[in-house]
Image 1 (spheres, rainbow, N blue to C red):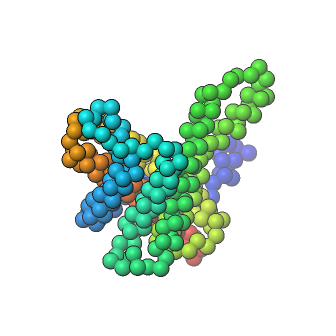
Image 2: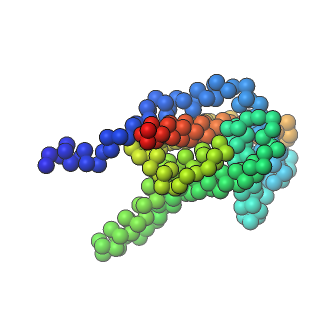
Image 3: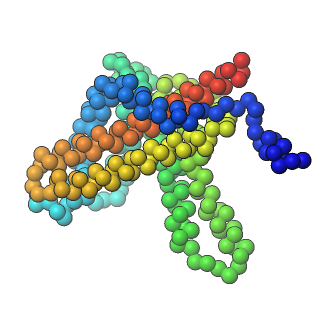
Length: 275
């Protein structure tokens, strides 16, 4: 059997690829099409997050504390930091739910808290899969002490390297988050997993593009903030904090949009395939 014929065995002829242009550009288009909503929600969310960061001792100014003339409250307890992390995680889930289901009556919905809790829990899983596992695998491979036994080396490398598949696993499971965000029910985990067949690499690429853009913007912002919040100006610290959180919510919104677009496209393809 020819190589080309063997390769076809691994291809599903019924699988439709999500256009790469849609994956890369549609998340930005959703922001532009709903620019007024984004500025309203983004600024409101940035102010709420900024107030929470200042009150919990996690403000941006803590990074530059040694350069400041005035005292800044910075929380040092790892246990409280962990609690604050979970609170912020669910605040972000609430922002995402409001962004997806924008209406005046949204906070009175009976399913609001339930869906936010589910979305926040999945966001924790997403952080572990997309960032935690690859970073852990990288450091474990870097810190390992080589052994003369090649079999132990091979087993260690194979097991530890599994963490690099975390982002691909996240991409296949991401429609779960989108379904909850739209206040819908999941039919089965198997059906969600099957939705992403043939599009895993493309969806993962879309998330990585957003991640790299976010990293670039934050690196530039941190450098600029170092000059902005020096001294004893409380106003400059507050403005820098709000700007930082607004920028973070912008990147977060792009991620929300990417997940929604992928989920909608895959769901439509699944319905067409079933029909």
